[in-house]
Length: 217
Image (tube, rainbow, N blue to C red; front, side):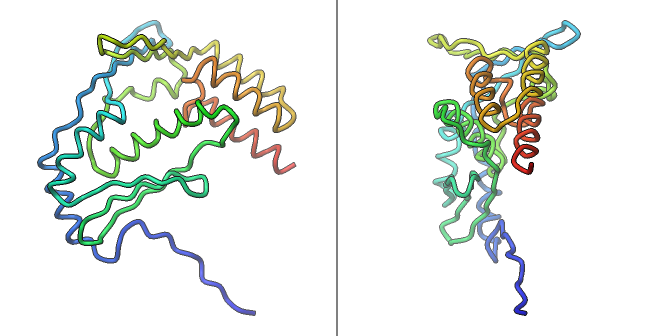
């Protein structure tokens, strides 16, 4: 029987001396993006605090001049359910990162929003730039989080997630018996409370586990 060798996934080119030097120069010269968005967090204990972040547009705008001057570029692709972010140098050397995307639904607007969210984190991670302050995992823990645009012209509604909504969503998920039921439930909550369906939250993880369980039945 012919032996097969497992396919190894490489996250960098064979040589990285030139791209490493260029990335170091980039990080020493880049102006960090302005944190023009604001998030207000209401904790389970009744307290509250705020933190700020920069959206993807602000991150790209801040990084582009320093990328260009150091012979670097960033490319983001979608392939096989993954977001692939590639940092390339003019020498041909490169770094790569991969991030699993959430399951696609027919709510393409919500799916596109999730991709943009993950693109921002992947873009900043591969460049080592800072686009937000730490929310101490409050959103993932079910605390109420309110997103606000600090710009003068923004009229976007706030997106909130409360412990009561999480409990209701989990109870509904427990009653789902088919993949179609789960998909309908996901679309309902993703439209009503987008923050509840953010990748990594308790509801997101519960939906993923339930879907996997049903598929394996």
